[in-house]
Every structure is written in structure tokens, then in C-alpha cells.
Amino acid sequence: MAERFSPRLPTHPYPPPYAFPSTSSSRLDAAQSPLGPGAVVLLTGSTGALGSYLLSSLAENPDVSRVYALNRGSDRSSLLERQRSTLDCRGLDCSILGEGKVVLLEADVSVEGFCLDEGVYKEMHETVTHIIHNGACLIAWLAAWPVNFNYTLDGFESSIRGHQHLIEFALSSPLPLPPRFVFTSAIGVLQNVRSKSPILERRVEAETAVGAGYVESKWVAEEMLHDAASRCDAFDALVVRIGQLCGSRRAIRGVWNEREWIPAMVQSAPAVGCLPTDDKVGRETAIVCQEAYICEQTVAWIPIDDGSEILADLTLSAPVPHTTETPVRTVHLIHADPAPWSSIAPALSDELALPLVPYEQWLAALESLSARCKATSSEATSFGSLEMATLPGAEKHARLRALRLLPFYQGLAGWGGGDAMGFPTLDCSELRRLSPRVGGDGKGIPRLQDADARGWMGYWRSIGLFD
Ligand SMILES: NC(=O)c1ccc[n+]([C@@H]2O[C@H](COP(=O)([O-])OP(=O)(O)OC[C@H]3O[C@@H](n4cnc5c(N)ncnc54)[C@H](OP(=O)(O)O)[C@@H]3O)[C@@H](O)[C@H]2O)c1
Image 1 (tube, helix red, strand yellow):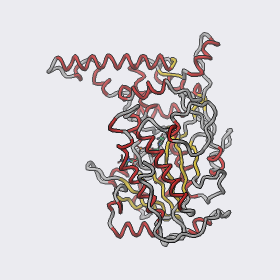
Image 2 (cartoon, rainbow, N blue to C red; image 1 turned 135 degrees about the vertical axis):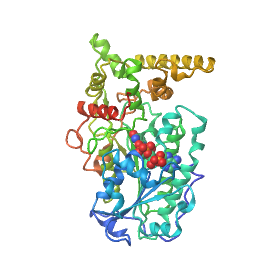
Image 3 (cartoon, rainbow, N blue to C red; image 1 turned 180 degrees about the horizontal axis):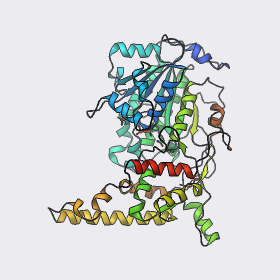
Image 4 (cartoon, rainbow, N blue to C red; image 1 turned 60 degrees about the vertical axis):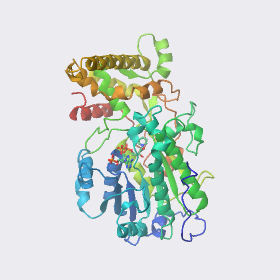
């Protein structure tokens, strides 16, 4: 598919091979937009979780002069209403939407011209210096686990076509340098790596991503950037493989999309009667300790607002020389100072007054709950007029997202990677090199701790997740 959607070659001559300048503002100077000093950013998916924080940081950044925020349309409400609501529920300043710096546009990037007014498209084309292609259907990955024929790679054709159009938009820019292209990929492209050693920030083979359309589409999109960069020396592309983003630390604390797999796991805990702790190294430790189930494996989850700040830095910073032969940089956006799962899980267990049990035991309890709910539901159907919701607890259980994500959790049980959830352990040296903010070893973004987990719980309670 990467070949089928290979972007067309640029329509205008490009400068000779780009030698990376050493001064911090040189790329911005070279790519100076006619809109004046500062970067002009095209951001997709600004109504999403990460997109909201990104829009907010970019709008507040004095080095940015304009943000074109491109989002799909909706029948339910206007784009302005949706954007205001996604900022507001995170405690982010909505006044950025009325200041002229943010231009909200309903668009379809899978169509040439993005379904925008010709004049608006031309203005963007002539001014955009940076692109952050962030819009994607993340929840589809979970819902489609492991294989759902509605969500095979073919189901992502329009996303890939959109990616192609954005690359072409960049390659045909009339500016002296094409816009820097930042793509939010996912660590899911590494899902088939079964190594316990850290995976380097490098291009990977297709085999590592095969399995679900969402991650396959991310891999294809990464490859399209490699292809474009191999044909246009001036093309500056950055693949940001995003790891697990967790609840925010600033503005409203603990905001974490309740539709994702960890919140869904926690939501199900009262019905399931327990919460999972790690099962991989924990099993070995439990044998040693006999009584307590102790686990020292870590998670490299990163608070979404910290992740967004890093992503904004990576986008706007001056290019630095590559460390690899490939013209496309790749980074793993994870926490550089991972936290022991044992420093987070007890807070969740304490908040819910429920025990921590090995992952397999939690999974068996969830499977059993799922079987009971299915039996209840077929009983309800066989009684005809008896609604499922009238059966004890049935309505509540119908709202448990973990039941819908059961195949995902079953798949996770087989993951043998090095982190506490079985995900591969990832190297982030390149991320540290490119973003001073990242730090690590206690010097950068503070490690996740008990207070973070309690913050997530506070947020989930505030939105009625357990009601
Ligand atoms: N959150 C994580 O832990 C995580 C992990 C790995 C990778 N990522 C990547 O990070 C990016 C942002 O994730 P997120 O957590 O902010 O996701 P999110 O909250 O689901 O937001 C996704 C954004 O993309 C838009 N979108 C979804 N499907 C689309 C489609 N078919 N066409 C056009 N726009 C579409 C959404 O628009 P609507 O508002 O209209 O739905 C929304 O603006 C994504 O590229 C995701 O793959 C996130």
C-alpha cells in the first residue's frame, strides 16, 4: 500500500541537498512564511485529546504566528463548538479560538484540495512552514482487536490517502524549504517484536506491524515519509511513535480519555472485583516472595500534556544532524524515566478498595463476567418483552467498556515485552537528544507516582465513570 500511495514528485525545483544548519532559528528563517515572523503550523485532529493540548501550546507559543487546525466535519455540532468543548473539558483556555491566530477549518484531507475553499487552501499552501499530522482513529485499534474485517488495512485507505495528500501539499510548497512534516505514529508498529532489549528508534520491517489495520496504516504512513524523503532531499520529516499517553498534570489534573484501555480496565474493576497487576516478572517475584505479589516492572507512560509539549518542541526546534543514514528521523515519545508499576497500581487499588491480582486472574474474572453478561442478554432476548436493562446490574455492565475490549486484553496476555504490561521496552536516546525537556534519570519530566494515579481516579470519578 505504501507504493500505491507513493506521493507525486514535487512540482517545483527544490534547493540542493539540505545541509542542517546549526543555529536555532535558521530553519524558520529559511522557511519564512509570508505571514510574517514565526511558524505557521497546519495541525490535523485538534479536536482529539493530544490535538487539544497541542493546539493550546502552539497558540500560546510566541514563535508561532498562525495555526491552521484541520478537522473532519460532524452532523452533531459545529467545529467551533466541538473544539471549545474539548479545550474546556481539559481546563485549557478557550479564548485562543477568538484571537485570529487559530484558524479552525472543517476539511477532508483524503480529498485533493482538502474540500477547502480554493483561496484558503492557496493561503495555507503559500504560508505553512510546519505540518503536524495527528488526526487518526485511535479507538478503532482497540475496538478492532485482533482482526475485525471492517478495520483491516483497507479500512484505513482514506487515512492513507489523506497522508499522501498532506505529503504532496508539503512537497509542492512554494516556500524555499518545504514544511517540516511531523507524523504521530504509534509504538503499536512494534507490536510483533518479542525482544526484551530496548527497541531502537529506527525504521522497521512490515512484519513488526502486521496484525491490525490501525497499526499497519501507521507503518504504511511511516514508509511513505521515507519514500518521499528519499526522492526529495529538502524534505524534513519526523516520525513520532507515540507510546501510552496518560492523564494530564496541569490545568484539570488527571484527564484521560475514558474510552481507552487502561481507563476501561479501571472502570471494570468494581464489577470484576479486582485490578490486575503485572503478570510477567510478577509471577517470578511471587514465587520468591510467597506471600505478597510484588512487581518491579515499569511503565513508560507519559502525561498527555507533557507529551504535547515535547511534540511541540520537536516540531519547532531547529534540525540537528541525523544519527542514522535514513533521512527521516524517528523518535519514541515515551517517558524517559519509567515508573515501577508497583508505585502506581496500589493507588488505584486503594482508591477502589479492591485487591491487586495477577493479570491472568483478572482476565479470567473479566471473561467470566463477559460470559455472564452474554447469558443474561440472551435470556433477556428469549423473554422477548423483558429488556436487558431491567435485569439486575445489566444496564451497568452494558456500559463497561472493558467487556467490549476483551479480545484486546486477551491479546495483551500473550505479549512478552519487557514492560509491566508486556509492551516492548523502547529506547528513547534520540528523543532525549532532540528534546532537552525530556531529560530522564530524574532530571526531566517527573516520574509517574501515586499522586498521578489518584489524579486520574479523581478525574474519572468527576465524569461519572463508576456511576
Ligand atoms: N493516546 C495515546 O495513548 C496514543 C498512543 C499512540 C498513538 N497515538 C496517536 O496520537 C494521535 C492522537 O491521539 P489521541 O489520543 O489524541 O486520539 P483521539 O483523542 O482519538 O483524537 C483523534 C483526532 O483525530 C480525529 N480523527 C479520528 N478519526 C478520523 C478520521 N477518520 N478522519 C479524520 N479525523 C479523524 C478525531 O476527530 P473527532 O474529534 O472528529 O473524532 C480527533 O481530532 C493519533 O494519531 C494516535 O494514533 C495516541
